[in-house]
Image 1 (cartoon, helix red, strand yellow):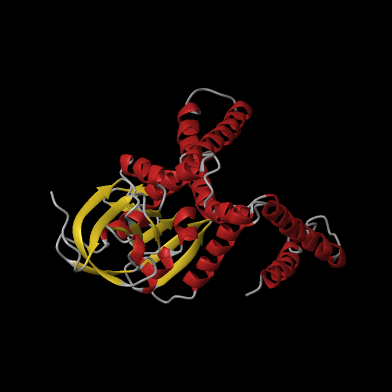
Image 2 (cartoon, rainbow, N blue to C red):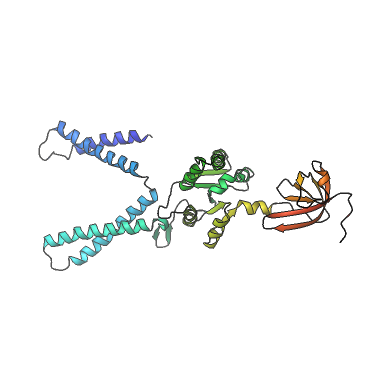
Length: 337
């Protein structure tokens, strides 16, 4: 149902019911009471529209504020009943009740809104937690979206469930797509295209998460805090974010680490089909690459650049930048030690 029909219906109902109370005791005519009641309903609708224009109201924040106000009313009732046991005159007692009600409602709403990130209603033996909690939910970082390999992981069902894209991550991605730097602009547009393709998959449920956490300025800190609140994991390629999240006991799926773990293992003595494409660091070496990006150094392969050859693995070197494989052309004599 469209919001406009709800607003029009509210104004009509307000006019019908309000006309039974406004000015009836004073004997006002019906034709005057109807527009006054409708105006009161329209004023409330305009107030709601103005609040919506000023800023987006969080449902969780509103729930926390209502809970805090109810808690304040209960506390004000208890304290006022205790104070009115003292011999106060009716006017003073009424003033105390009003003052305590306003004070406790304000304090209750303020405390509830300050702690809304961990807001939940606790009843003895029952805990009503947030409905969007769950280990199947994953918060996606900007770096993982731009990288693009997340789309392949979802297509192959290595990642399933809910993918939550925070609103501040989407804004950051849009900022990158609107950058004056052509490289950044290209990466940002690629990330937006990846998001559109993710939403078309049936294996994952992609949702935009509206919480902004305005009290935290940094995007990475917001992401970690939101993951703690939702009990969700974080999907990222950022090394620093990975370490910070792990330090705060947040589950992290690093796409780079996954790709590193899935690289094929080669052992000395095995044969590889490679094609040298450029000269190596030494005068007799050539460089080739496997399908996963692993660098292959071909000994005595400078003359074989551009040709597909069969190489025998002589050694494997693991560095901080990745894995390097050294091979010699099949049929070439083994190097003397």
